[in-house]
Image (tube, rainbow, N blue to C red; front, side, top):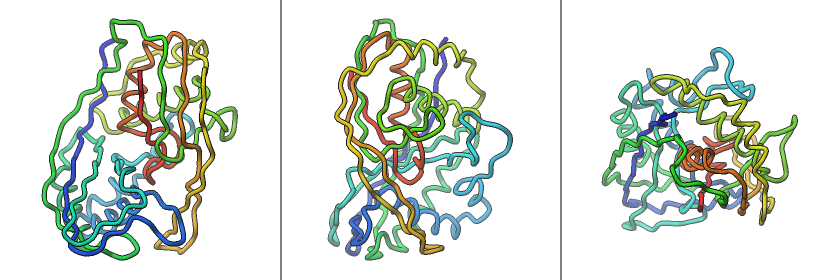
Length: 279
């Protein structure tokens, strides 16, 4: 089956106008969550009519894995900024992956990202000057490649939490990892793409059980965020590291590679679940 998952990658370039810090003194908060929070404030100002549909989309209907809320139509990709500090005049960049492809939102995001920099970022409220946004449409094929793949390694770059068997799991066994990848990509496609995918997901899940984990260097990590609205502390922990798999992986690798752009697991909008795939 020749199906593609479409998105737009925005590569955002900025110059620090003040001291921009992604290393909060009290909590190890991912840079992506710092950017997300600042973006939300800016979006409410620059596009109040779009704010809810982009930043706090409401759930309607039933979606895979019992999702209570709609996933946001975007994620920030900025793990390389974690714990980094930029002095005035230094340049920094990050990506935003935009999953809404049915209506144009690039101008909305551009205006909000510009306002975000003027408002200030992080605990030091350091301002950034937007110097450019490169927009690249991507169509990621989910078709099985012509050459068989029997091994792959997945690196978990930011804290990742996966649900399986009624609760959170301590290690990413492949059937659980693929189920969460499948659910996230299929849900984003259903909500924001041109039409839902027509895969036999149950059969794919059954075949995923034949893939085994051959090596693992998973470690638990702790992180947190503080809500600027309520002041409450929310845990953002999970596991990082890598896991290697072996077995009939050919049909699953395109999904894993698409998940590089979407993230996987819980709280991806806060910067969690960022992965990298090595064949």
